[in-house]
Every structure is written in C-alpha cells, then in structure tokens.
Length: 295
Length: 307
Image (cartoon, rainbow over all chains, first blue to last red; front, top):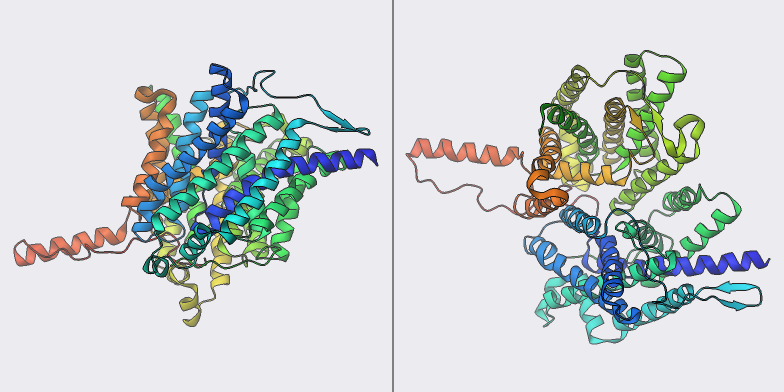
C-alpha cells in the first residue's frame, strides 16, 4: 500500500513535467494552429542554458532557471518571426508549418548536440537542494515538489490569462478569426508573438524541471517531453489547457505504475498503446475537442 | 571524400528515396503518416529473422517482406484511417515508438538492445537500383491512373472528391497499403546495406528526415521524393568538410527556406508546365509576354485536406 502511494506520488511528479510542457504545447497548437515539432528543443535549450550559467558562472540556480525560461521564450519568438510568420503571411495551410518546424528542430538539435556534447551531464552538486522530505515512510524529492507546484502555477496562470484578461480575449479572438480580430483593433501579430513567447517559456520551464528530476542535462532531453506532451494535447482535447494538464499527469502516473507493476521495458509501449486505443475509441480526444477555426 | 564513401552515401540516398516514396504514397491521398518507419522496421527484422533462421533465399524473403509490409499497411489503415489529420499523425508516431519498445523486448526474435546482424546479400547496387526503378515506374504509372486522379482529388478536397463518387477512405486505404509495401522494401534495403539493425535504426528521426525529403523534393509528383532524398542525403556529406559538426544546420535552414519560398518543392511539374507555356507564348509573340501564373497562392502539401 505504501509502495502504491509512493509510486502514485512519483507518477504525479513526473506527469507534472509532461503536463507543464503540454500546456505550452497546447497553446501553440490550438491557438496558432501549428504542430511545432521543434517545441521539444525549446525545453532542451531552457535546460542547457540554465545548466551552462550554473556550471560555468556559478549563477544561483533560481536565477539560471529564470534565464533558461526567458531564453526558451526568445527561441519561441525567433522561430515564429523567422519561419511561421512568413508562412502565415503567405497564407500557407496547416501542413507547411509542420515542415518548417522540422527544419527548426534539426537546427536547434544539431547546435544543442554540438554545444552539449553527446554525453549527459547534471547540475553541479549543491546548486539546488536535493535532500528528500520524509513524511511517514514516504519520500518526496525537492525536484518532485517543485514540479507539482510549477504545474499548479502554470495551469492557473495560463487559465486566468486566457479567460480573465484583455490579452486572453485577444488571443481567443485571433485564434478563432484573425481578420475579424484585426478589424476590431487587435494587433494579431503582437498577440501571436506573445503566445509564441509564453509557449516557449513554458517549454523551457518544463525542460529545466525535467533535467532536475532526472539529474541529467542532455541534448535530446526534449524528445520525450515532445512525444508525451503531444500525446497529452491530442488525448486531452485540442486546445483544452486543463484537459492537456490532466492527461499529462495521467501519462506520468501510467508510466510509473506500468514500470512498477508490469515491466519497465514495456513502459513506453504501454503508455503509447493505451494512447492508440484511446484514439481509436475517441477519435477526437477524451475531452471533447473545442474547434478553433483559423481564417 | 573518397570514392568508397561516396558510394556508401549514394546507397543511403537510394534507401532514403524508398522511404520518402513510402511517405509520399500516403501523403498523396492527404494522409500525413510516419508509419513507413514502422513498416520498415517490421520488414527489416522479419527479413533478418527468416533469412537466418529459416534459411530462405534473400530474394524470396525480400518479396515476402514487401507483401508483409503491405499487409501491415492494410491493418494500420483499417484501424487508423478514420482519425483526423493531427490525430492520425500522432497515432503513426506512436506506432514508431511502440515498435522500438517491441524490438527491445523481443530479444529472441530481434536481438533486443544489441540488435541483430543481417545476413543475406541484397546490399548490392543491382538490387537497390532495380527496386528504385520498379518503385518509380509503379508510382509513375499510378500517377496517370484512375487511382492517381482520385488520390489527387482526395488530397485537394475530400468533400468534393466524395461528390464525384470517389470514396476518400478507400483511396486512403490503398495509399496506406502502397506505403506499407514501399516501407517494407525500404526497410529490407536498409537492413541489407547496414548488415546490422538495432532498436534505433528505425526511429522517429528517420521519419522526420524522410518527410523532410519529400517536401524538399516536392510532394506533388513521384520524382519529387526521390530527388529530395538524394539532395537531403548528399548535402550534409558535402557540407561536413567546411561545416564540421554543424553540417545539419544548413539542412534545417534549407528546409525552412524551401517551405517558405518554394512550397511545392524542387520538382514542381506545375511550375515547369507554366514556364514551358510562358516560353512557348514568348516564342510565338516574339518575347515580352505577361508572365502567366506568376501570381499563385501559397500551397500546402495536403492543400486543405482533412484539418
């Protein structure tokens, strides 16, 4: 029983990281209509840049985290301005941006590999608290706690931002009908760039947390996040922030549980096998898809 | 680069061309799928197994694996074809991921994490070029067939195709079966050249790169994926000298630039037809004609299909 609770907690902590990534990914996919394959590399670069600051310059971990998040956000904006914006201007359909994002993905991954080297490293000892909390026989690592807290902040923040602020209204207006939004005075371009920054920054946060949780910074750290985040967005319902977050956490729990009780080797196969079954059963995601038609 | 290295690179270009054709076959019907990587893995490991364990002649094993690839393609299509575009793409990526886990966990059949050696000598130029020529011929013939016209219609607009009496699901099913056969052939070729296959031989990277090759070459004509794959394989090799480990950066940038400025890829039959018409008109009128077709909307590979 205790093992079950412990593993459940581990699963939630792992899933929180997937969920954070999925929230940003969902923003990009549903609001901007882009399936951005490069999104995982934003997470990688968030982790890499913060690691670089901590290990080379001895910067405080939390400052480095902030810098990593900002840097990932800037990468999001840069890719939007350099690739997705020109495609929007040319009225490209839904598929061209995927290809452009594969290009960005190749560039960012190649540079990351050259920069970080093929082997994985970890944050220097002592840069962040690693001593576990013990409650009853349960062990909670600080990194796990940070992930869960970060998820709560991100989901609440993004939800409030989208539903309660002027900016949120602008985002919703632009994603449902760009032209009408422009006519009523919304600056569509700035809105989309802001979304790109936000999504990139959230990916960067997920990247740092993933690196911290695994105690491992590597050039392909973003790949697992990308695949699981994508799964969470698809199953959770296109554009549904809370749906993506819930499914993200569920994937983490499923992963830990199947590793514990079935087979660690089949962990990913079980996760994605269930995902496939869910897709076949509910072709539009568990939480019903909210349609965003981009003009 | 030495001649031997060039020959190896060209061989990989040929294998990439087969993978690109497999992706093209389903993209043709408006379905974005990375499943050919899974088909390739399935056929490659089957090939290795039946040649070494059952002692079948490689050529026969190759034929069996192509048929098996088509069967797996049919099963995939039966299960997944009704999903909408993004969901279908996700499902095929999931297939690739599951494939890797299966390879890792069936060591008695696949060699597990250490992979398996491939005996059976199909890794010669004759086989590669022969397979490519046959594949190209079939795709070319299909292009002007009833299927090809129907596939074009489904890609442009499935709703309109349906009113014309074409069943989009049926066309997409056939596209996926062809994709399976080509993916299977590509997998066996890959295995024969590498002579060693492991869990990472057929993974998401291969799918993304093949897809990129299709787009680079042009996804509207069967020659496009072949040209794209050759350029995409050779370019990094040429750049490796001056660029070192950053060689692939150019590939990535090129991909973005091409999708923005040449959305129909390097091999664009419509542009060629337009140019030819322009030249013909110019010759007739003695130069100075207005450029026909200069204003054309930016098009997409699946041109508004199923999104």
